[in-house]
Image (cartoon, rainbow, N blue to C red; front, top):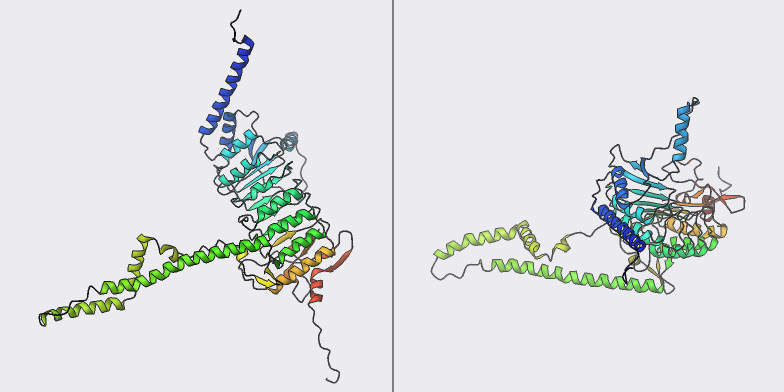
Length: 509
């Protein structure tokens, strides 16, 4: 007989086993937290996996450089060489971590590759501990690792913890819910992001466009974005075009192998040329102008007060040095003369009062911001660019920061090509852009093997047949999606700008 409320022995054993598993899990977590990474991935990764209780730890191997076949005929391999080749061939598909090094030092890892095996939450936690210890890590490539929308916030936090990480490639990781926009916020430090073959649709494209820019915020670090081999249609292309309106950091955008037609191409082309501001953008522009005017009004009185106080201090310092009027004959007058000469010498020397003023201003801290020059690296807000009035609306000059746009393997015809040619002609008219560093679109890819270089559009001669590596991309024939070859883009632009030459007179020799 057992007492009331007492558990049977089977339940006691199950509870004991469960408590033991919890205690081992806690010990593993505490051990993983207490472990200090050394910066050697070959040593830190297996140790952290063992402390976290992960079975089947992938190996950390060095990624070999790609080898090209030699011209000479290879000799017949021996049996051991053939077996080693087969082993290397099938070991490629086993879970492992490949690394690229800057040099032979094992601590100089610059890139990490994970290919073809699923990453669980525990594995991502281990990577979040050992990857920030790599001081030279610049790129992380995750190809078909089974990412989910729950893991992306942890991955974004990992990217911010790595000081030198600038490239993140997430290819072949489709998500049921759109969440890739979390990697492109205003606080992100990524410069290159590749999202190829992730089944990104129009809903995800809308969030990505909002992450690129809104009237109140924009991405400032992202330089290149790859969205090829996805499911973006004309609607998604217009969403991304809206994100390019006020984005001045993105230099390269790839939308190849999508479902974009003429409507999406027209939306992208309109952003490259002058466009009118919306009501929300006009309100934000007025707010920024008001904030700038208030800031200038706050700094201007301080500068005027400092300038008005400086001569008064000089006069005040000279006033008590003036000797009192003489009362007892000539003896005090002789002592006053050298004092007046010293005062004149002090007033004649310009550097001395400047040094004294700077010394007096340092402890107060009021004049220090006025002496420092503004940071040239931080660009002004795009809404503060010079705008012009046109038919009752404010018009901005357009996005001239984007240099490369890839729209190949889409459904774009000549109807969608016309706005691009008009935008490129408008950009070429402004040879000296008012904002430094914004040259306009330099490379436009529309079909396989076709690249339109706007720099050659305004040239009088024909496009180069064999362009060099430093001369930009050449101009290929414009092809429709199903049509034959047509005239090059340079010829079309040349015909529009061609002037009629005067005919020679017949009477002259």
